[in-house]
Length: 337
Image (cartoon, rainbow, N blue to C red; front, side, top):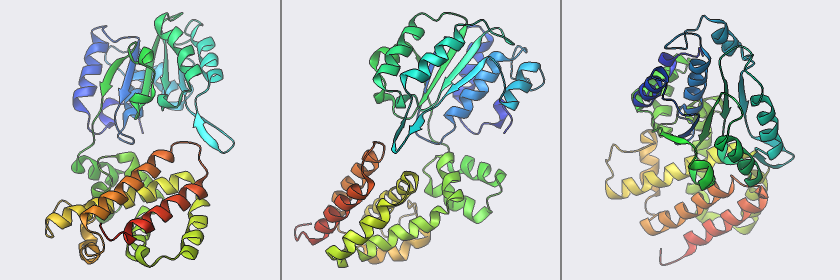
């Protein structure tokens, strides 16, 4: 995708505010882009970086030497810092990466008038890395702009937050989602379904399309349909199978499970409600209602959300799945639910 403001879907107020501050010379040296995953925060950050480095007054122009270098991913004054995997542990941004960045930005710009740093998933910085970054945010050694991107603002230190101007991003509308998915050559019927399923997250929709997420949705539906018949042998077997998957696949699976449970709550209130993520399987969901009264659904939702939270950390996946399946099975066996 070209680095231009008009290639970004949605977020019109945020884009206009950033462009105005840049034109008027009021852009702060540190910004914090916050909002849900997959809605385009990082892309806005990259376009803003290109505009900062561009020779034109209201960039990015797409034609100058800086813009061409940004488009090729080779601009000497632009740096992205991203989490790195270390073995099987959760990806982190460590102090070594921050120190390396600090060394680079302390040098005078090569091509543009200043340097620009984008720190993606800034919440993945460990405490040492955040404290090291804090010193640079307080007293930058040269002309540099920092753009921190996060979907978990609360994971950042208050001292880091206080040094950055927040820019809050919201979800994309279904219409915006569908339009962009069609541009990515997603078939029209699937684009409409993915737009409804992805809760305003374009990144999530594209990921589901790429990973055949609708298959995972059906797998989650089968789980709910069969859970009441699980014996312990089935629990151990399924825990082993699920624990062998990669984290991203499990995140998608539990996202679907969360949405299916939410749909059951909606149908319990109004069986004809149009407010379903999964309108195409309404009949199958209605058939599950006798097994899943409101109390059971809320209890299962709590377990699902706890798994989603723990999947962000470095946990043993098989043991995590094992514990979830045992608790889920127990919820269905409680007479008072």
